[in-house]
Length: 234
Image (cartoon, rainbow, N blue to C red; front, top):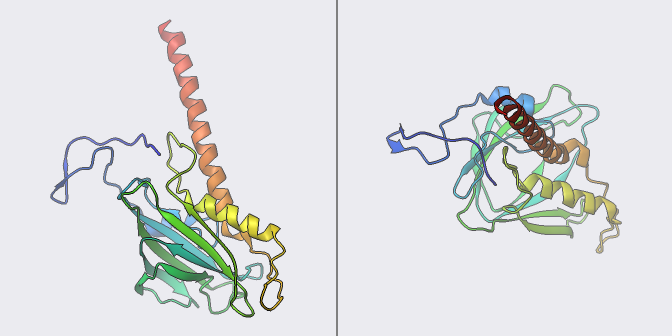
């Protein structure tokens, strides 16, 4: 993945700037506006290269249309969770924890139907320095906890994005829940039929599609600008 962000020589917190990166700041509560799904994992900064620390904003909201879900996430690197704000959440504002490599993910709301309930968390992960960083997506039977589905993928590999880098893990999540929903979802141990995973609610597919459109639109704009420069100078 590449980025058009460049940096000049300088010092930041007593250390030289990393080539190709500039210091950035974000208001995390303003970033909530850009979260289009439940616990979507929206990268706060555009740095997703090897060794990058990647803070991701996640939002969960209650309401009559909110669907409950449960899956398990497996990562080769630990994640740090910080609860920024909540109302009727299972976590409390200011609570911080280091998540185990394999951990459960759900709405984290006490009453999912409560329209005033919400949770805003920052989940930070570090990209390793290898070409491979495998993540797993697992679903267990809601009745007997038998493992129904698991898929692993290297989240370092994906379509090249020349202008705006993509957090490839989200497209992976979107693909696996589509695959799970297309299966019979029958537990081999107790026979319970697992309900479809609420893929649309999560926003993963929308993120992947919007990253693609953003890069295509920028590419088209750059092409048009180049053609105009040629006409002016020609």
